[in-house]
Length: 260
Image: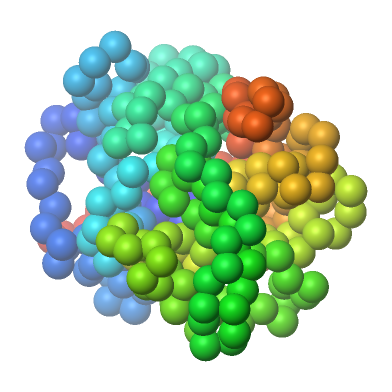
């Protein structure tokens, strides 16, 4: 499946009992020697009161707390295995996520954003940069650029992702270009993957930082590298935001089998 170009292998693991090794995850996600994906999502039974649970792994085999585009894909995948319901909930390491489905479009409610840090100065090989950050389920750094197409996403994104300033967990890195009063373009360097065609939690982080700094109304429209448009809705609450919701596509590509 893919969500705005961010692609995932989905596995119904409720009866299989798979415990994938790092090597197996890397093989499955390898774009020449495996299926090819940004990550793997395993559907499992819930441990609490949610409808279902997930186990999410990045391309390099590391476990991820949350993924916005993955959450939309997971919701549509889960819908097929339930009763076709248009609303469901599932457990992630970041908390319980609720989703609403309308055809290929899915809206997921994100966990409350945490740890806003605005206007930090970070020394990089490109000089001292002003970088903002927030945790939207996973940590994200946000840099505003004049032209997202010209941004050094691979080089600078890799450097900031591993920067001592964000140790020990590291951070995802978003390069954001304002394209209107309530619209932005975003390119994202993700931990455990590199640059992807889209990143849901990154899109949300970029939209919230933009709203905080520039007073944008909800929803903020976001164009991602893959060419799709996402929407981030929210409710301002003093210096914070509540009821953050991400809306965008979630599409099936194909189904099949692979031997591990």
